[in-house]
Image (tube, rainbow, N blue to C red; front, top):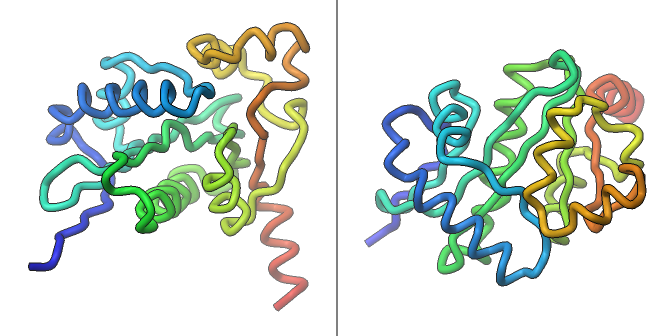
Length: 187
């Protein structure tokens, strides 16, 4: 029997998966020993209601998740909370989720710069394939609400001690103006 893999924009019908999503994120953070910003049940539910979340289901079972959020007056968009359930890892599902989140971000916010913070090599590789480049934290949004979201991360003290100049995570940015210009020159 072939597995049915659905990587889709989450909606209100997916809200029952939220406790599992949050538990999966928390478990992954503990195993990795690195930071993943904690989010509330209400926050993740809101992302689903707004059509700003991607969920992956395999035969109807929760397999992965990611959400998008705009910052700085919609000038910046972050793809955050990327997670794949351990038993479904190693099959390219994170890449499918990230690509779907990227496309959704570009559709909803076509002129925004997309960014992410990650400490994971796999996510850095996916981001690079999408056209993101490593940048300094100063090149990201200055929206205080975004930076408050980092407070739930185990490494937040590093960010505070360095006045938001450095952290354990790597900052990566996709600027559609730069990327589209580069793509135009090379094709």
